[in-house]
Length: 211
Image 1: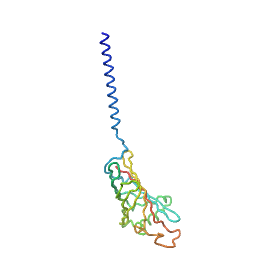
Image 2 (image 1 turned 180 degrees about the vertical axis):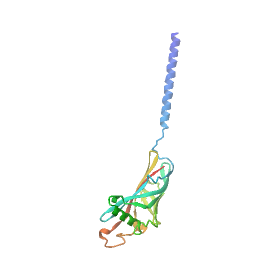
Image 3 (image 1 turned 45 degrees about the horizontal axis):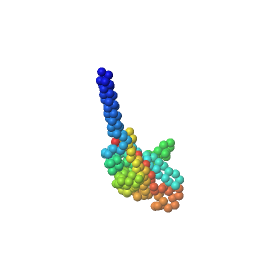
Image 4 (image 1 turned 90 degrees about the vertical axis):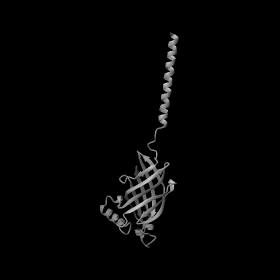
């Protein structure tokens, strides 16, 4: 009787150990199959115009100004974890001088001047676009920037990542405004401007949120 009881006890122990091993294996398998929520998914993304913004900065000899421009719409695609293509439309009529927020009169004058024919002529050219042409090297992404119906290539570093289920695209680029027929107070077109000279380079910081 004792022998039979011993055999039964041994069988129970072996069965229990086997179940524990199977449970561990199942847990390990589940762990391996867990999905990284912040991994960049391959798909077509639609840009959120409410969460995206373009920041601008321009400088003169004596001072500089900065502000924001709204994004109208945009889309881009990711293939094999990398940016494959993309395009955004920018509302030039929304140009906002945030550095003059405390001086409403000066703010209104600057924004009006930037929107008139001396600069971006937003009444006739309300939309600018930025379209990716080659993103094989994210440290030097190539794109076409269109302003006032003039298109010229630009090159800049770009980063694409995931955050809380949304794709985040950031880029810093600059362009020569005179290539887009914006020559107002440019030292390359006018002489003896003194501290009224405005630099030709305009800097843009792009931040896009998309799903």
